[in-house]
Length: 228
Image (cartoon, rainbow, N blue to C red; front, side, top):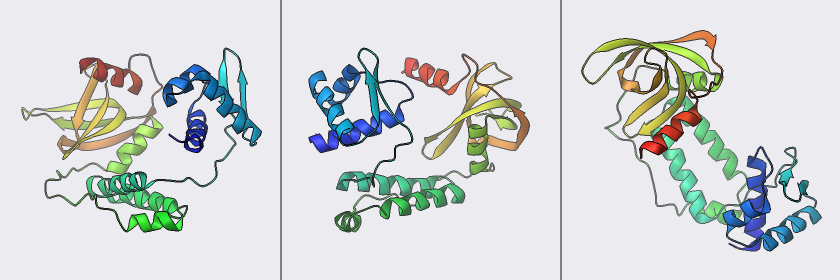
């Protein structure tokens, strides 16, 4: 990685972090020495980027700082375009429109050379007849996850047995052509995955939940990772 690219990536990394990041962590991430990171940070500070740091604690960046327009390489542009296509073909119209809107904003930041790269893309996501339809509102489910609202529904399992569930919705997971709604089930008192195409009578409650130890998305992902 060239120094200019590394400096840019360091800024992006610090903006994503909600706590101080040590020089050693950055050195490991970018596969350089701590001494190189010290020089990089000083170069960034000298260029006017608001990074503060303390020995033994780490570096923080002022979150009010905005980066200049982002530069992408050809592979990154192609990966973004492919992702937009997959969202368009495998979610719903509302989310697909959001993806296309984001792509248009990205295009507006591209140089003439990168715009040319868009015409050279050779990786696509095509509509599929294997897409399994569902009754629930995909966008509504996403909003419930974001707002942390309890939801209720009827679920038909693979043994064709129907049960009523109340869950804390945590994530939507794609296993094409199937979408799963992952959540903490109040009935089973455990994490469960529900196929969207087997959910009916989906209803959003007015009650919101707070993160509780053992019932969060982080806990769910840790459980999945340990099972692998």
